[in-house]
Length: 215
Image (tube, rainbow, N blue to C red; front, side, top):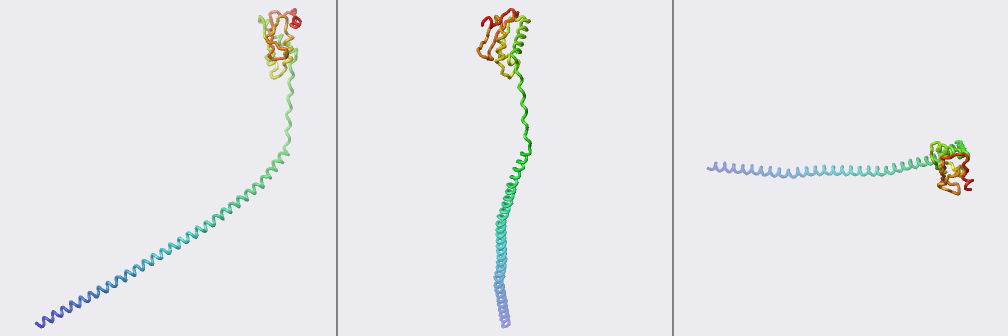
């Protein structure tokens, strides 16, 4: 019986020792886990901090590059303006040269001679108009016409269009009138409206002039 008790007691003590060992192991493992977590969090923090620092540096570099480009742009504009001004000055200098060349060309160009005026065509004479009126009268006589009417303006247009010779025309018409002829349109002064009716059935020389009968 004593031997059994000792065996049971030893077994209990062993069981207690193993349980104590397990608790010690658990505590050590539990103590190690927070340390590992802290190390991981520290490492993560350092990585994040390095990344943020890198981003800040890149942002700073980009801002510095923008400033440099902004500074360079006005310099380019100023250079362009100076080039434009120089071109304008050169154009202004060239313009007077062109004017001087044009003046020289004007001086060199010989003056054009005025075209000689065409001599005015001689006007028809009094006798020429009388001949035409008598020819018309004899033509009507040969065609057995009783009379013809002659207008001063139409006759002048027929013989010399565009020429003002109305005085000569009127004188010829009046001088060609014979006894029995009449006025359709009478005018005291030379006028293109003057119209006379010449009777052509009798053109013998025995007929007196109108002025002799109605003088």
